[in-house]
Image (tube, rainbow, N blue to C red; front, side, top):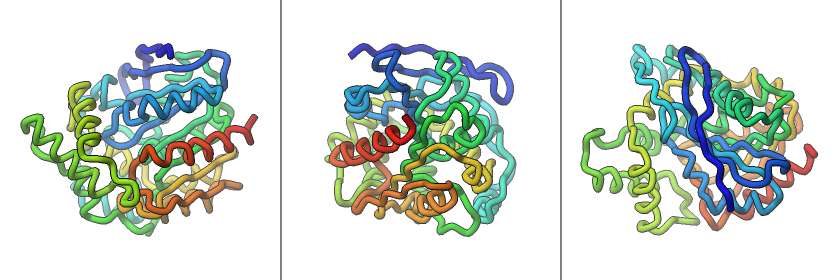
Length: 305
């Protein structure tokens, strides 16, 4: 399968950002934009997963968010507010200081579609990517054919917070200058904590995936800035109320990082949204569930056609 790649320019916030993307499938097929989550490179939308979508007659675009992978690193401080203060404000649904926000990252997605001369697309986001997708769908309604949100939240006030162990596993890794093997060991540990208990990925595969991301571009400093963007936007409830695109919300019942209550809150707020809760699924995309997830997404795509 041909994979087209390149860089799109986004002028969001200040200065120009280069967003690395890959584009698969026929130019004339309905486009699907895949947005990945916190500290996650686009390769976590596994190539085999993307190819399954392409075989459904879709054009699939995946990309690295700013501050991760091959896209521009902003090299700006995330926030001067203490983390505890920002976490409390987030639980209250309030925004905090941040170098950039989810709104800026949604503008990045729009800039990528502009670069590819795509007027509208099916928007699918996972975790933080699902938050970006909500903002995008509200602010760019005419460009959103449908909306797919996987294990995300709308950061509504007083939602149950992540399990402390799961949150710390994601945002508190080993020192950035740690040896490669230490970084890979940590990736295996994180996968055990936040992954799907019913569908555990073999350790050697987790390590191989982590090695791919490490060798492609290891940049742990971007995690703090992206996390600040989440905290910087506050509650997304007002965006959800303005979304008109057909929406499916997919969430694992065993997700300890992004509690199922986050998915329920999104589905309750977006008019007509369909909620799909999957037993035994945590905060990852197990290969055993790809067909189920893709089936839910393509059913939602069909509503928009």
